[in-house]
Length: 261
Image 1 (spheres, rainbow, N blue to C red):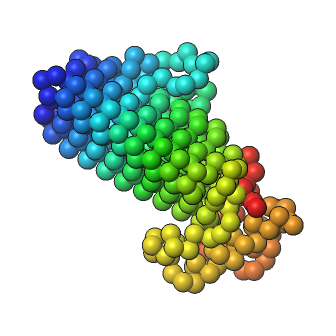
Image 2: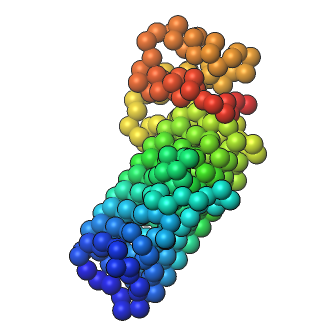
Image 3: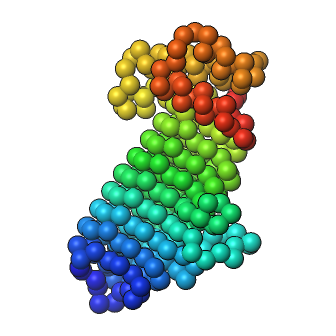
């Protein structure tokens, strides 16, 4: 284990012998750091309010603050958690808060994701795998970001919003409704404008799958129909592939409404 002589590491912390802790880091309370995770200088990880679990092969850059108490006036909990998976990169000055008991108790970041400089991930957020949050993205509490989502710089999502798999929220957008999977959303407030065909192609979807998804997205985003009737129209076209089935399930389960133009 490489721990710089100026770092302060709690006696409660469990740090892998293969991890690296840089200069002037402060690790407080119950913190677990996995093998080959590198924590650069001046990072602050953990607090007296809960537990932080960081997996293997992560790169946490200078001055990140992970596992502090939620920015919630009503927060009085102890024993809540922040869980970060493996192979993530967390940029300079990024902040990720603990969960709350009323929100499930855990804020979670999956695997192979990149949270760039000055991002904020609020309490009880659930971030999937291979997600990219560009500089200064701000996520309110309880936001769900599914796998392979990309969010442009200076964009934001308000509390309880969901961003569906392989969606793209463009720079400067503000989402206050759910962004359907496989769509590109823009604006303030953000609305889905088109199918994320480039993202789908890069993710390995076939031309036929992309055509089916695009057809379903176009029907779903038609505001002349309710979401339920649009979903019925999609199903009437034939058995949906797995991606279309996920799109329909996401839309039908939306509590905030989906962001249609």
